[in-house]
Length: 278
Length: 263
Image (cartoon, rainbow over all chains, first blue to last red; front, top):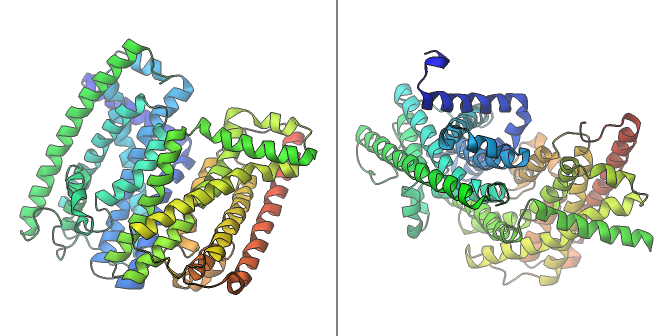
């Protein structure tokens, strides 16, 4: 489809996506702060698994896939905060808000590009896992693996939209992202089953789309893996279908919530005139 | 007297300057949330991988000690980034003040801030993860934490001095705050690293600090851990000296080429 012929919404999302990609390529060293935490956390986890549990079995699977997942998480959360702060520092946030395109579509394009860049971390983690820690990682169903990964990427991006709407009005967006990063790694069960967490934290895990996404990704990777969500005990295909369905519903809810929040933020900013000073 | 004034001013200003990017309420949130969540993450990974109570204790103490690196490495390197980003570097270099107290002073309040981080993290270790402090030698532990904070601030100055030569010091702040988790025996013993990587661990003052802290918590006296602390002091002082030399070389190069922020 030619750029000019794209529907308006898609064109805005694509332009924002392309712009964010160009930013990253112009200054690629910014990838480092975004991916260093998941990369280091995975290396530490793999060493711990080696020390206590051996390099085979579910540990390697958790560490490598979890590390990749954390890369997507980290990049999206960090970048959602940074994108807004960057606009504030450069004094361009007013222009973006004043443009006739919807602000949420601009942020959506960026959010998708951020999550996609987070996949670079997954590649790095895979390389370290396979070549340094000798993890044997076969993908039992490559098609479903790709579908699960892409849907999870969209889910993370949609959550990034909600964060971004809050960051527009906060002076401490970047700091908030630093504070949120590790708690989200824990609650979503990126690196260990959520059953290990206290029971009161489970509802928080279940409202995160990526919790279901990482379960689906693990199901498509190993036939030995048993679902860790509500579908524990079900067959792989049923559990996978239910994981993906729940994630899609949650992602749709994120988009709906983000749309309302962006509307509120935009109205508040226009009424109060506190976009940059906030 | 003048040098002391420069030292104190540099210490106070550098600490206050961090609130340009960090609001006081968020500073408190970070103190509690960041230290707790990192500790919890690795404790759960340790439990999942089959480690028992001793592994939980090992990991919790390691992460409690590592929490000070957010103050002594990340925040100290961030000063360099702020100077470059906010355009205050030419003013710093134009001042006739003695460079040594000016340079070292930058890290000093962060040493105290690091002590607060460790105290909070130890509280989490004891009350949330059940680490037993009953046999600890409080004096040995206090001296260990103080020395670790001071020497790690020295390491922060080394990375800060190094990153003067680059456009985005924040990149180095991130890298060196996190790699400590791999090399310093935070979550697993240094011996678990590949043999070739183990010497790298002893470049970081934190490695000695964590080792000494674990021994102090198990009841070792200050005298018995003093050889470890002596090595830590040597590494910390070397870090400060090398950081200062890097800072001076940057200043010379900046005066010669007229480039500061753009390097």
